[in-house]
Length: 464
Image (cartoon, rainbow, N blue to C red):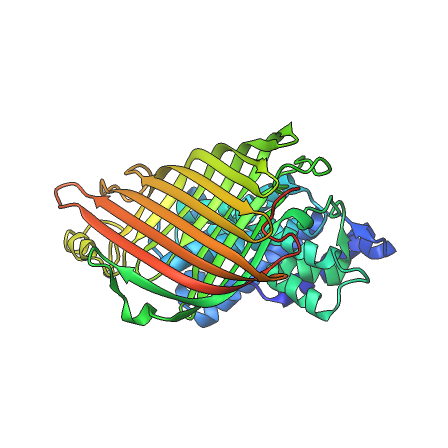
């Protein structure tokens, strides 16, 4: 959401205050440079908004800042992809700016939260939004940390220094991490024990078909839809030489793109916890942070949450390894059905936040996740995940709406030759909505896909 010029300007303004810039040392750490770059980024986004979207929302004045400081904070109903994807991505850029300037995870979380609050108060003229602050200020860190680590892995794993392609890939993964690497060098404390040799990294290219509704009719516009999927299950427990001492030393990130754009993006990682077990059974337990964005067809929901749980690996035999995660927690979630019959009912009732043919629902959301993966030697892996979210009537528009959302995923990968594999996937999602004085509404979506899969050096991610 911000141009590279914003970071370059921030680096130029603050480099004289940063010892690493002045001395040319190999690593650097600065508390001032992230603040300068975040302000420069917000200024660039504001300037772009004035010229590309609604100028009135971005014509910030001292009066609008004073008004926003007085509040109140509201729940806004901007388009779903803006609130639930672009705002977390903006927060991920704040987080990446702080991390790439040598700050550790928790100070970077503080910079992310402060950067989001600065945008809500002084980046726009509209009232500050509670849901945007959660999306940018909290989900931004849950997304930004995996992106930062992927960017650093691309740079640090090069034997003779990163070449042009690795440098470009690092910028694409996390623009601030890649750009600051070129501007000010390596951040302090970036090197860490390498878990890539026992991580499940996949790049998938294939096609899918989608069925919607109870009739399970295939949606014509989703038949044979090209799809690109990228995923990383990093730092799985079980290796005696790799301990989970820092936030997100274990994380999982999954993404899926089609011609329609981003369709799914989810991350989860261990924020604070400990290792347990050894030998044939080892794992981690503690507090996890997660961000989920799901937007295929007209089935949209997103969640930011903190959960308590565990991730473990059990070696059943030489040829069978089981990996599993279980999480229970709560957070804040959003759901939308742009073309549902519920939308027209809600719109006709003239309820706050439900407009433009959209069914927008925000609320506090208890949730749970269960995942299990069976790895049979080096030949195949079956991965099954079930998620459930209950979006309550608390913290939203006051409509009394409640949603129960269930998502199940299954994927089978069969190695064909070396790092080349065939992937088969299936996903079933269901949303049950209940509103006061109106009939319940059910929405279902199922997607099946077939993919060419390129595996990382860790194969299916078994820790041996």
